[in-house]
Image 1 (cartoon, helix red, strand yellow):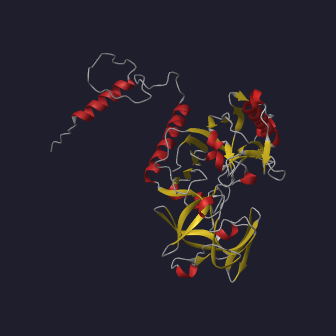
Image 2: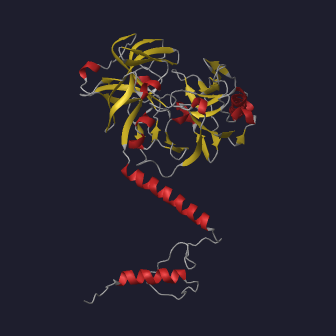
Image 3: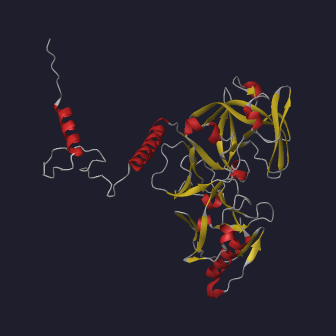
Length: 436
């Protein structure tokens, strides 16, 4: 029996082109609209590297392209959720930024402070001693459960202890201390439910620095939102913070790599094993107006051993710079504002550069590796409630364990999209007006 092999015209064309690609004598004639196909490493390929690559270099290049392709494919199936953000100052009288979270089944709504420098979420629960605001009632949730002492999550919280076979822990936040039970329940942010989310159910709290309805940790250590939703949101998020004066939920927290800004400049994220939750970046200089001020390199340098360096933080209100950096910025700011008028400088609370007459402030630019962020006046100046005093909204770092740390705080981040791309170890900033 005779068998006939039928080859399609397209297959023959591709085979001919491939063979031609392997032939060092390339056809250079003009074929009009005819499509020619070459292998990328063919001698005839227009994409062939100008310098000949070794076999090992070719394989490594192909592997790198595969890795980029896999990241792209992963982003197509990644989850996405957009969560409205508001200033807590007007709504819950807290100097933090808040998001609405629905906890349990059926859902109970709480306003959680978002904090990029903390990991575990915690929420005040029924019968909490010292809690003064809306409480979560776990007894009303059908999906609530305690975390056992033997669970791995119990070893990821600070100061864990066991009682009645369930895990509990103690933590400090600002000037407050909390005692909490480690629990799990469904947490919904925006439209994205997260089943069995692990958080602290606060049973006792002391001190004045507690976000009244709880906290959502956006750090990058275990038990943070980033870690617990790694498969869903690919360890990627961004936010835009509205003005602290705004009454609206006009800002947004975007979870996942989908719909993140494309036109945005990045700076590398740095890792500090001793303070693994923090988002360190490399601040190399600061410009006031058109002048780069003189700052000793060690004042901006990253040093994991001492904790020195610069971080982005959503929980701190006003940017703090280590003393040599702050003095350099402050003195140049005063010089440019005062000019020949020799305006009188006053102080107000923790601010040492204030004026009782209208001023025109110079821009301040933070110069990072690969990225510049120029702040307009709204991100630089704070005004007294009566409007009679205007201050530079920055200060020197406190004289404590953080005296070596520069903190880019939430007032300086307002009306900017700040993107945390942990898989690619980078942080991006782009101007975005989200105050309404």
